[in-house]
Image (cartoon, rainbow, N blue to C red; front, side, top):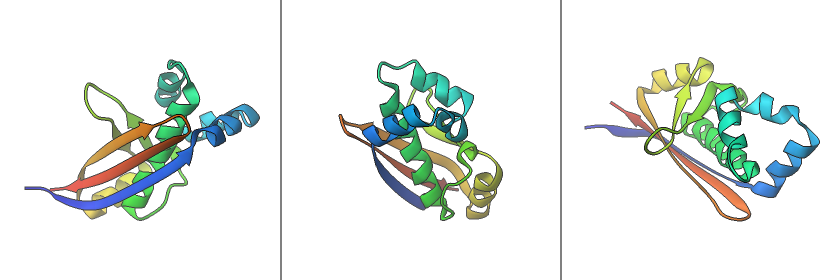
Length: 123
């Protein structure tokens, strides 16, 4: 049986992310991995997908109890099921200290908002 060792949530305005992407082109490189950028740019309206991933990274940082400042250390990936996060660096060390074996994510967006919930599952 597994236990929940952390939960985080974040909500962000999509227009705010769109404005930052337009004003600061390096924002996407600074905050998202190559794979995340490729996924978002392949979608019809990239800002909503960037916003959802930004919220997911924030939610992961909150669940870990360390906040999120090293954006590439939590990469949101999407396979055949629900999205998850691959952790590296400080995020991975903190997750290991907490006994995290899996990061579960739920992402959503509407016309104006994007939200994410991260649940850290322990052994």
